[in-house]
Image (cartoon, rainbow, N blue to C red; front, side, top):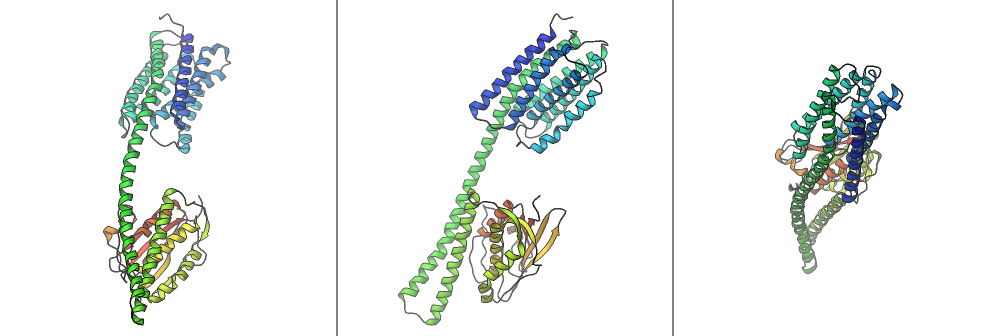
Length: 457
């Protein structure tokens, strides 16, 4: 036997938990940390204090209520702490957390059936349950990719705790008539080791938090650096493409102002002036909307909108261009087609896609806006803008949506562009929980698909 007061050991462990909570409160205040995981961990420690105090005062609690309460609390304490350590590097997801709460809830209901069993049987079952949980999480920390070095160390520590609890479970099972405060070697030594290691875990969690924060900062810096490079490249291309049409506008203006020219030449210059000014305005308009979307100045205000109304309004907007190129442009789906999205953003998307189709469809060609499918199971509606124009190379079909790849193709009337319109479409559709993709055969037209949610789910 070991000469030790186990109830005092429980109270001492409760006092160390109070110190741990104070340590975490200081950490949160000092570094202004806003992480729900830390709050969950501190809640676990508060429950741990309650558990240890109830154990030390166990004789004063009515049975089996005290037994069930103690069992439930210790299972939730273990779950909360293990959950924090296992998922500290991921963004907190309340649905994920609530789903995993079923684990300790199920175990506590299961163990409640042992509330009237002998003390040694209860100790054996509870210790074994806790050992299994610790071993399971230890395996995750040691085998799952992406874990930090401190998490690996914590994994080994949890493995040791699992073995210690297994020994205590075995000791309780072999010794019939044992008490919870027994000082026999197979029970008290594992308990003392468990309480000591349980004090080390919060310290390791602080190191894990710091390690994860440093990793996040490092990744954010790399992403920011890459983003800045892409944006520099992007704006240099935009500036280059703006310089061309603006230079042409200046030259046309000089010709119209300084020279005596024929009516026929004046008409051609005026047409060129209109085309250049329209392209320049379109580019600047898209650039402004893209910049506003990326800086958060555009407010996302979704509602049930009629897609047919947006399409027909934009068809009317392009009537002059359609007549100029002798195109057929029509909407081939019913007048009642509702989706859940932001009206202004989807209006911009449809306008850009129709403008692109007109640009790359030769004189006398055909453009149709069709309903591809309505998928009520996946809550999506897909339309397609179909033309028989010049098409798009397969290697460019994905690149046209990437910010660091500006794919520019001359239109059938030598219209220039930067490909910014498709990137804006991708940006707006992502905000609206939609998608866009291209299918076509080169030199045989293009099919641009736009998918949007039907309802708010």
